[in-house]
Length: 395
Ligand SMILES: *Cc1c(COP(=O)(O)O)cnc(C)c1O
Image 1 (tube, rainbow, N blue to C red):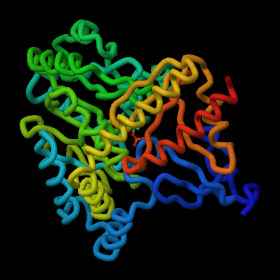
Image 2 (tube, protein in one colour):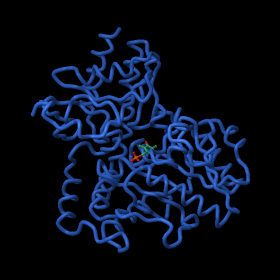
Image 3 (spheres, rainbow, N blue to C red):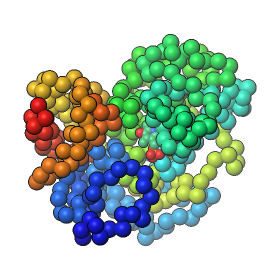
Image 4 (cartoon, protein in one colour):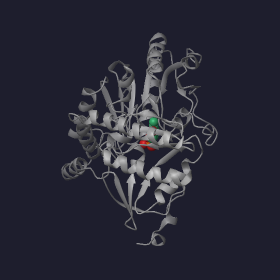
């Protein structure tokens, strides 16, 4: 079908989209309405942890859709219980609440912290968050985010989110008052430009939280579920947070997210938290398949090895073209361009032939790479080959 024949005008405008309609995907490759293929190093913004149309996910969806789609969140169902058990078995957390998006999981974390503050800390409600952080697009999660301009576009904000600087412990400590109930951050800032929190900072936050009786909350919507080479990114710094949120990769592409906490933090009472689709069997069955595949023997070691390989390739490009190096963890990495050519590279990579390449530039001076966790070394080589061609052209 020609692009002009699609009823594009019927969709509400929210962002500029290229004139492409994606029709199929398999592994690291997408196909558009013209049959052109694209090597996908965006994967729905680090969402498709196992690539497009993963067989295990298809089998889980198909089998579950024949069995039971939604009995109501007011009843237990088997996939919901199985996935909750998988998550508590493989993390430092004891309790899980399922939701549908990262923002919704973070809203849950904020509510949980405020509830805990009401019960155990004289009504303390403020959560210290980081400048340049991203926690979602609901009113509270936009207020928690440290994105430039977000404090005013839908003013008034939800109050109670003072901002500190990532990797600057003193900036956090300075904000602590008797109203503070928690500290929330991404272990690796994703939208902010792939900026890892240092091990010292994470350990310092844990110590501050212990000293002042605060909840240490990690937003692992992007960094979690194998993305950083460990099942959860908090493991990299040897700390145990009190609350964690998951989204994106946990569903491998379907809408699923989770709010996890330690037993002593779980303070919701009947009616405090819920949602029509929470823990629905169709999505949790898929999540269960994803976690099973991520925790299969050798899988995460392979993610680490491929992360190191991608790092080497990016460093080679950086020295070849005099760029600013690279950073990241596992298969969440950025190439620092040191020039504002990110958006141009993204466009030219997409439009090149015979195959296109999908990349992302969360800031104009860097490119972000978030391939499927089962990407192959050959695909990494193909990507760097295509990027080299483009960088030569621009040089
Ligand atoms: C994407 C993202 C979110 C929001 O998730 P949605 O599913 O889009 O609501 C929240 N936090 C982080 C760190 C993210 O990367």
